[in-house]
Image: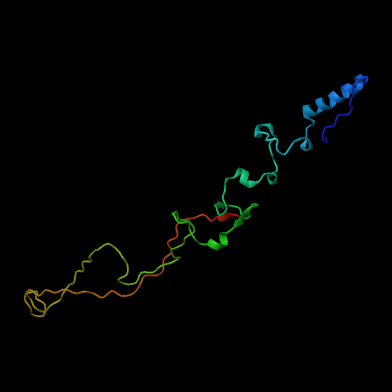
Length: 178
């Protein structure tokens, strides 16, 4: 229905015809009982949400009105198609894990690592090595020395192989709010 107009007007002293009078009221009656449409509502009407039918077409609602997301916010998803207002930024961060930090978007770490001899920072510990001696001396002395003692510090060389320390995971995509 377009804007409501009064079908009949009456001037002072004119004879009022019942059908014309009823037509004016019927126009208003029909309007307030279900015929109000967009043309009849003022943009400044401030109608409360409970008076509106459910909106089923997402494009009719500004996402900022319902989602509370700010520009730059991230969300993770199992679908690869970005919704309107979001950009898939997964390629920028492929192969990285999320880590909670007070400084967002900072990066660090490495995909692999190695340990060279002497560079592995482990707790202090010892290795006990038993060394057996053979002697021709029937007294059990080594090289003819009574009570022979000594120590040896073996040289450690080499490095560990590269290691993959990635725990079990599920892959997702990341979308950033435009």
